[in-house]
Image (cartoon, rainbow, N blue to C red; front, side, top):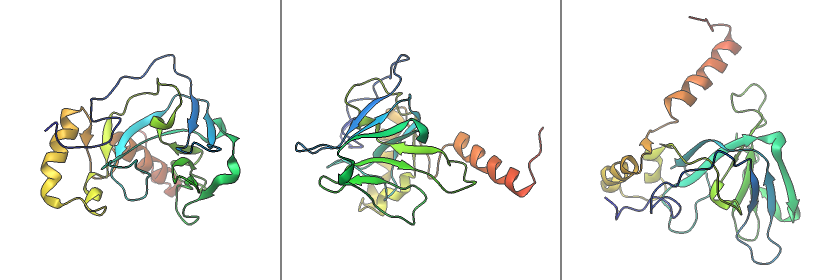
Length: 192
């Protein structure tokens, strides 16, 4: 299964993060006036994502995406090159208008379970150490990006081989969290 490509940062194996990593600077792919964004926190919920909205580097079938608290995100340089990809989307993905790399995507929708978090692509950190990906989300969605359905068995096998359990939504922990937030908002939440 090692011939099945997932993402350049994962194809050689998932590299462990560092317990001492406390964030760093994300950089777009531009050589002239690169956008630099500080994400001053260790990432959470790092995963391979097959959705059609996340930025993927050339040749990648999946993106690698995680979250950090939005209040820990700060544009350091060349923020004038950033533009929100889709203002109507839940995740307000700020992309470099020159190279297309998504630098950060805050969730600002009031009451949403991810409100206060920003989605980032940890492979864009200038220094290593971000927590490693632990699962794969929206796996079937790669078909919508042009992957032939006949490759899905090999893709799921490769993800499993990499230790990234494949899901066709988010992993159970995140789905339970989102459902808990919704239950609390609806008044149907009960403690065990």
